[in-house]
Length: 138
Image (cartoon, rainbow, N blue to C red; front, side, top):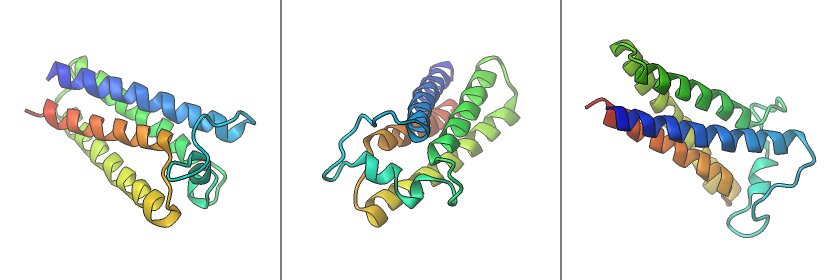
């Protein structure tokens, strides 16, 4: 169980870093380090209407900061000896992240016709977190 939770923790930290980077880019004039043409076009994804939460101006990456921060807290709590309820909460949180991540991938591919490499990195971190949480349940 411990290696799986350490993996979940590492994936959470990596995803948090990506989400912070994308949020900083959103709110600053910093250039986005990613392709801006072809099938991989981070700028097209991030500046699309889907790049913000419900037209609020809050980037979806800010939701990623929140999701990954909670995922890190749950993994750390379990590593420090959290009870069985925490394992179920962790599993539910991971499942919710997977559902949202799949929806975002669908939007990128179907609605926008391009993908964002940074977003894909965050989605992979969600997937790794979910798989690690499942592994930790054994």
